[in-house]
Image 1 (cartoon, rainbow, N blue to C red):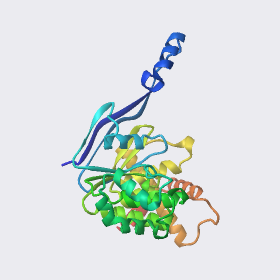
Image 2 (cartoon, one colour; image 1 turned 90 degrees about the horizontal axis):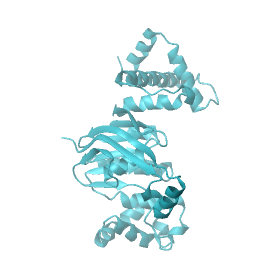
Image 3 (cartoon, helix red, strand yellow; image 1 turned 180 degrees about the vertical axis):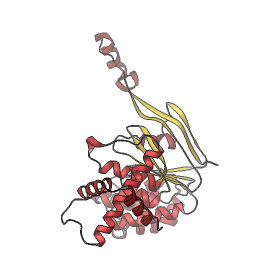
Image 4 (spheres, rainbow, N blue to C red; image 1 turned 90 degrees about the vertical axis):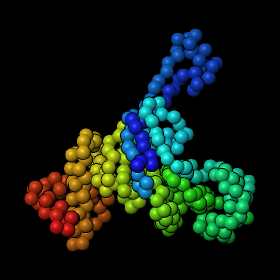
Length: 316
C-alpha cells in the first residue's frame, strides 16, 4: 500500500492579481487599463507513488518545479489541480539556515531551533551533546551565531534537524552542506534514518547523490514530468541530457526512449572506465568534454559492439 501518492498534481502561480499586488495597485491599474494577470504552471500533471522504505530522488535543472512539488507534499501548498495523499507524519528538512537568531549563542540557538521544530527542552537536554558533537562545534558553543561561518551554521542546522523520527522524510538540498567529510557523514546519517523503514524524498543537483541514496527517481523539466522509475535508469538518462550541448538536447518521450538514452550513457561510462584503466584518456580534458567524446564514440559503435559492452557491464 502506498505511503505517499501524487495524482495529476498541478500547481499554478498568478502574478498581477489582487492578492499579489494589493488593493491600491489593483485599483490604479484598473483605472489606467493596465491590469493584467499572468498565470504560470510551476508543476503540471505530476503522478507517482511511493511504498514504505522507498527513497525518491527528484532531479531537474533550475526552475523544473522540484521545490514547489515538495511544498505540495508537505502540505505547505494546496495543489491547484490533482491530489497528494500521505500516511503518517512528515518531517521536512528545508531551508536549514532559517530559525536562528544571530545575536544568540550556539547553545541558545540549539534550544531555539529545537523548539521551532517541536522538540521539548527535556529532549534537547538529553540530546544536546550529541547535536554539538555531530555538528563538530564543541569548541564554539558559547560563540555568537553570527560569528560562525556559513558551513558551521549549516552543520548545526542539519544536526538538529536530523533528530527527527518521521514516517516520511523530505530533504531539499540539505546533504550539500559543509565540507566533503561532513557531506559523507550527513549521507550516512540519512541512510541510518532510512534503514528504519522511513520513506524519503531527496531533491538534489548531485546526480551521484541520488544514485547512492535512492531506489526511485522523478525527473522534472519546466514543471513537466519527464520520467519516473528506477533511480539508475532515470539518472543515466538525465546525466546524458545534462552532458548534451544545450541546443541538441531532447527529452525522452516514452519509456523506450528513456531506456535507450540510459543504456547509451551507461555504455559511454563503461568506455571511460576502460580508458582510465588503460591510461589512454587525454590529459587535461574536462569532464564535460570527456563525456561528450565518449558518447560520440558510442554513436560510432556497431550494434554488435554495443551489445558486447552491455553484456560486459551486466557480467554476462
